[in-house]
Image 1 (cartoon, rainbow, N blue to C red):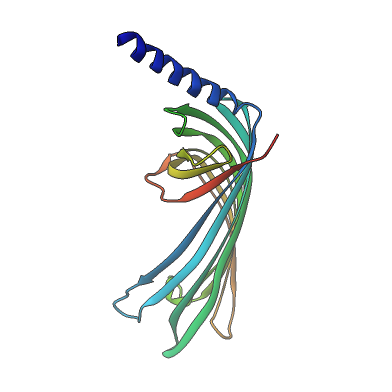
Image 2 (cartoon, helix red, strand yellow; image 1 turned 180 degrees about the vertical axis):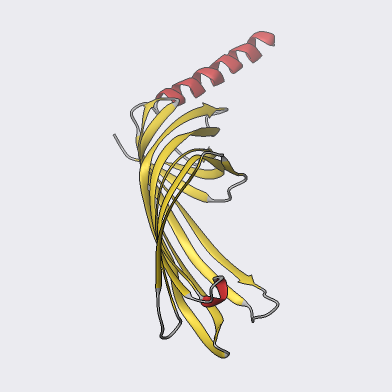
Length: 226
């Protein structure tokens, strides 16, 4: 009986090892989609509704069964429905308040617990560009601000996977940390309708890690045929 159990365990272990070995050289594409919707309740103003989406995709290749690397790209779009108070006048606003794009490179290491489940993590380098519009209600000087923001970032992210079959994985983000943050912002402030404008340029950086845990996002990964 013990020999049967031992042989069964060895057969399972060998099967898992062979499955992992088949990952070497495999090319894949991953994608995650996030939707955002929330209401901001303010004491002095009516409720503001925010909405948007973000899409991230990565194209990679397994160098070995436990190492992969590749490129990633992403885009996001945000909007708002709110009431704007300027000079005692109440106006409705509804439209796009920001969008962004990013691209970079990632390195990942994998820990396979079975032929179905495992975790992964590693560093990444990204460059972000975003445009945002701050309504008078959201700025300290009661001006409409238009901001262009450029930020290179170096960080570490982690996730988990579940293999649906040999072509498809279900992936989940577990969290990430930015180790280095550098940003360059061009800000233009202007009255809601007419008047003088202001313009400023700022450069900012910080070395303190910014940890986000957990980071809730689900995605799919597809492996290309050889």
